[in-house]
Image (tube, rainbow, N blue to C red; front, side, top):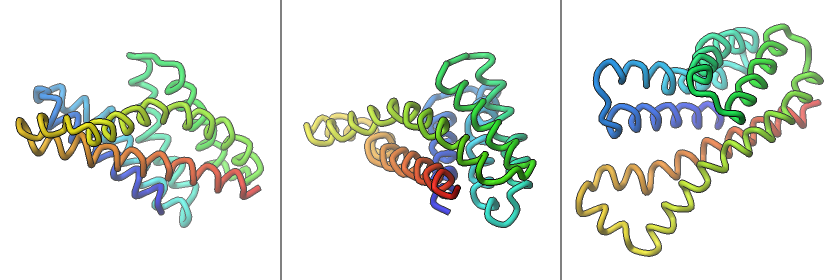
Amino acid sequence: MPAAIGAGLFAVLQLVNGVLFAGVVAGDAALVIASTAVPSAAWCVFFAILPRAPRTAAIAALTFAVLPRAAYLVAAPSLVPALLTVCWAAFLIVLARGQGSRWLARLALPLLILTALQCLGDLLTVLSSITELVTGSIILFFRYNPLRTVWRQLLTPAILTFYWVAQVRFLLAVRDES
């Protein structure tokens, strides 16, 4: 359940960052939502229904999370996110086919490594927010846009930390299940 909550919070984070704070126009907002918030919301649904209906969860995640992410990566390729997407696709296919926890545990290791690599960039965001809070430069930002400051300096790091910890815990649980 923590992974579902983390993915849901991550979807909200991407929606708010992409639509409210990026200043995108209406047509671009739909693209931002389709390529970021919808896949994250699909992951939320995946983690929420996984214990009850693993095959349905896997098919839904493949359709609404992995395929849009793959389409986005074709347009803007990046190595670690591309490998992460391919590994998640393999993981979900194995889960949908019901091939057992042994294969899932094997696929969880590369997913765990790639997830850790992917979270390093977000870790820098968290650390820079903490540094700004400690050094007091947040007062300047707070003076100009308090809502954006609270969102960027407090809520974003909290959501990112929770999301990545929940992802790692899920993959460790899958890995330990075999």
